[in-house]
Image: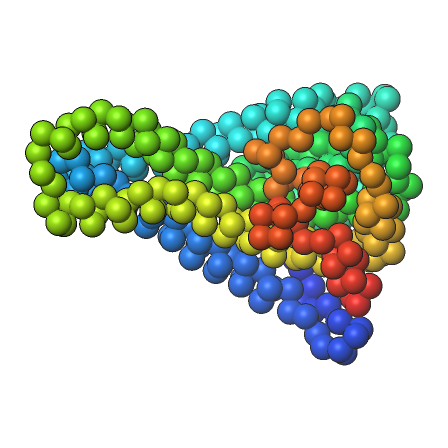
Length: 318
C-alpha cells in the first residue's frame, strides 16, 4: 500500500517573502465551491416555483420535482459517466504501453510521488498540445495527453503537466467541475423547455387575464431563465480559474521543479493554432490550457483558465 502524501503546509512567494498556506487555499476553494453549488441549486428551485406560479400554482410541487429530477439526473450521469463522456468527446484512445512507454513511465513516477493510484492513461491524436484529467475520484481517474503535447515538451516539462493534472485528481476538482457543468446544463434544459412552451402558453393566456402577481412572476421568470445559465457559467468558470492556480502550485511541490511547468507554459503561450481542429466547449474547462488561448479567443469572465502569462508569473514567485 502506498504511503499517503499530504500537501506541504506552506510555499513561499519570493516576491513578497510571504508564505502561502496551500491547505488554507484548498479549503477556500472548497468553501467557494459549496457556496456556488448552493446558489445554482437555489436557482433551480426558484425557477421551478415561478414556472408553477405562471402556469398552475397548485402544481408547484410537481414543477419543483421536475427541476430536482433534472438536476439530480444530470449529476448522476456526470458522476458515473462523466469521465467516459469526456474521453469520448476528446476522441482519446488508451495509451499503448509500448508506443507511449515514455508517457506511462512519467505518469507512474508522479503517481508514486503523490501517493495516488495510477490513473488510466489516454492519448489524443490531436495537433493541439494539451492534456486533461477526468474521473469521479482518485481510484477511478484518467489522464489524457495529446500527441502534439508529447512532441512539444521535454521530460521535465511533461512531468510538470502530469503533476498539474494529478493535483486536480487529488483535489477532486474534476468531479466538482464536471458535476457543476452538468447542473448548469440542466438549467439550460429547463430554459429551453419553457421557451418552447411559450407559444402554447401565449395562446392560453389570451383566454384568461393574468393577475398582477402572475405577471410579475412571469417577468422575473423570463429574466432568470435568460440570466441564470449565463451567471451559473460565469461562476463555474471563476471557480475553475481559482483551482488552476492551486493545481500549478501543488504540481511545483510534487515535482520540486517549478522550471519544468514554467517552461511548458511558456512553450504553450507561443503556440499558435491554425484553427482547423474543432474545439468542444463542453470539456474546455478540463484542459491544462484553454484550447481557445491558442487562437487568442479568451473572453475575460468566460475564460475557463487564467491567462497563461499570469500563471507563469505566479509560478516564478514560488
